[in-house]
Amino acid sequence: MATLSFGFATTSVSAAAGYRRRSNCRWRRPTILSVGWDPEGVLGPPQTGHLARLEFRRRLERDSEAREAFQRQVEEEKERRQTLRQSRILPDTPEELIEYFLDTEAQEIEFEIARMRTRLDEGFFAQLKFELGQLRFAVNKTEHMEERQIELEALEKAIQEGIEAYDKMQGELIKARASLTKILTSKDVKATLLDMVEKNEINRSLLALLDENIANAHKGNQVGDRNTRLYCNQYGRTLLEHFDATGIEK
Image 1 (tube, one colour):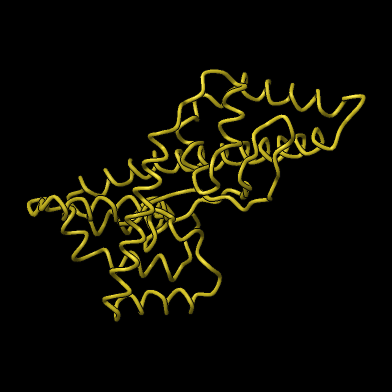
Image 2 (spheres, rainbow, N blue to C red):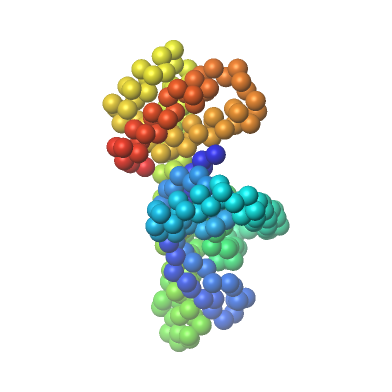
């Protein structure tokens, strides 16, 4: 089942004195991704090299033990991350929210931005800028204060870019849901798809959402869902081939 996520290309920053020591955070530049073979992101971002990724998939298909080991790793990491998410105490103030993000594991940043999106408002950034201002214009700046300033500057940039990526993804998902409804309620699915292709309305967000809808239908054994199965059996491969051939933008 394909899913959408936004990732980050990061810079390591260290904690300043006066604050508890944190693990190195790697703030990464956000991009919107369509993820198939590693939907939970447990292996991190895909490594460069199409052939290497293809060989990894083929190995999983051939080697049942490797496939089972990989699946166990996925499940264990999913459970660990779910436990971590549930155990965290949500912050009440902008000051606490800043520390909350600084204590967040790199692979959890995008999840926490989504969870805290409504809290990442003018009040949050005002507090962040206030703290940065105090550090930048301090008369007697210590090494620890400089480290703290670097840390907060990295956080500010990462949150801003993360919000931009998240909001963009949400906007695309809204459009994708409307397009999916258009497809699944159409009396002539093939004609509808061709019309959408001509209007450049087919994108990665729609394909990921449609793929997820199909997977959920099969998982729930909804064999009577005629439109979903019609697309899956007759038009899915054609649409994906068109997508690959034309290089549709995300």
